[in-house]
Length: 102
Image 1 (cartoon, rainbow, N blue to C red):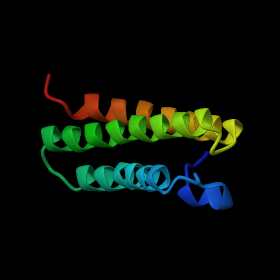
Image 2 (image 1 turned 90 degrees about the vertical axis):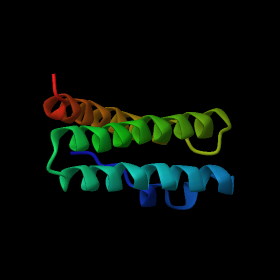
Image 3 (image 1 turned 90 degrees about the horizontal axis):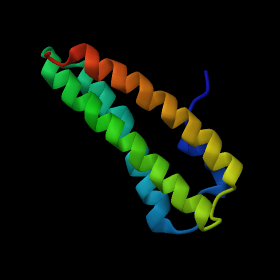
């Protein structure tokens, strides 16, 4: 399975420190919210943390869009990582639905 890794950007990390930092924070937020949600007992609590993680995936994708538009990162690299983020968002959506009360 493909994986999204901030370190995969290596020397091609966005040259604008504010965008690089935003991407790092958003990507870290995905992982931390998934971990925190997994540790909760209540389905509603789990769903809330997974929803936050899903929001961070869309934020990360938006930062990649900006980086591609400004030509701060190669467009292909941005698209590859956005595809991984899309898959993560799909998995999180399934987890959210599985844990929400209906």
